[in-house]
Amino acid sequence: PSIQVKNVPEEVHRALQERARASGQSLQEFLQGELRRIADRATLDQIFKEAQREGGTFTFDEVIEAIHAERKGD
Image 1 (cartoon, rainbow, N blue to C red):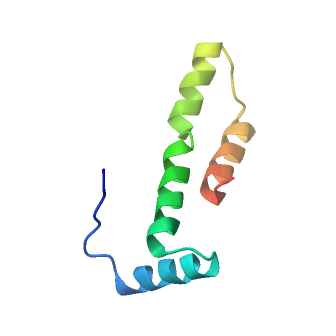
Image 2: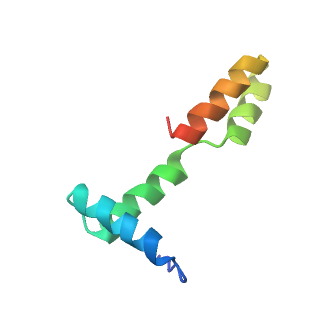
């Protein structure tokens, strides 16, 4: 399967090309890796549903920490 993304702003395209070049990859290789990383990462919703199935609870601070980690990509 393939994915085509249209109307990517020039500055976004340029930034992605620079990141790919810096990592020694083609833009396609770089984007494939990024898409795989995104697809493999559990969403907060998935994490919370799993915790509910397991009977776990979260404190407010744990939720905030998880949100910050998600935003940073940890």
